[in-house]
Image 1 (cartoon, rainbow, N blue to C red):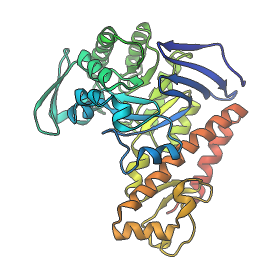
Image 2 (cartoon, rainbow, N blue to C red; image 1 turned 45 degrees about the horizontal axis):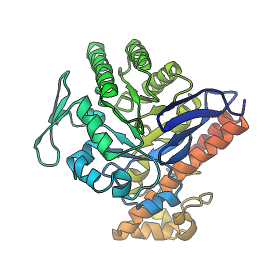
Image 3 (cartoon, rainbow, N blue to C red; image 1 turned 60 degrees about the horizontal axis):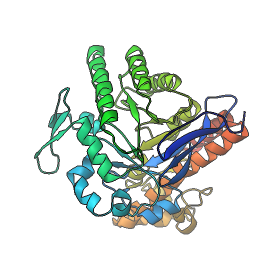
Image 4 (cartoon, rainbow, N blue to C red; image 1 turned 90 degrees about the horizontal axis):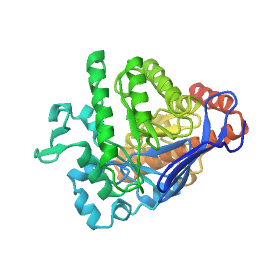
Length: 384
């Protein structure tokens, strides 16, 4: 079924509506309107933790088709500080990014910086990874920081547990996440920013169900599936993600946090997800690992030394239009920084094109066939 649906949701100047659905999957095309422009989903967000996607300028990101960036409120509050950014005009002006921004809260750092923090019902106390100073984050403080930063979509403080973990521990963390979400909702004053709820619960579906229902009762304008891709493996990741997506409201945007491999993205689109973020395009690009329509290319390999071919004959990015594999390999061998930029730029464009193509396939009612073709072509030609 193609065409606009009647379901839509909004909070202040942020709204979402479903425009088209695939008849043979749960994939859908949506339109998310924010104070800094409208974007179509499914949508991939490159990660700009410190206010920048590593090795890439805002102009390069826009040229690659990036429509929204993820930045990290926790790290930006550590350095240079939310007050400093606010004095300089807010995050958009500070980073010279004209399109929408989503800021994460520091909830992931509860997981990734476990050795530097203490968690209680009140919040999280960190030893700053920058200078070791004590930093206390409560749900209310996180909302204050993200309000100063001025992102279009903001995430509340949540507790992401590692894997493996006991069910009782996962349940306590999910209960705390819901209490923090309620406090975050109460602390939010303006309505120009959309505050999403984050579903936690590790791999335990009853815990995920309880958390989802509790967050839906708080009526957030959008919802995220958190606590995946933390070591549980692809089978558990997909089981948990599919379950959560099936429980979340149809009329609200659904954001799966931290997944990036193309196979996982296409699977999640088919399961009904709308938004994704991951460091994979830029992190892998800086090591010479390129995603292409014909599989992975490891540009450091000797076989590319005299190749005049682009990274991807089907790609329209600046890198593929102007440079050969032989030249790109030379840059990595010579330790030239522009090589990191060029492969990262290509990867970002690959992910953006993949989402554009997915939306087109959904509108045609052909998403499952499109996803199969993409994955089969890549698997058949992937570089050994």
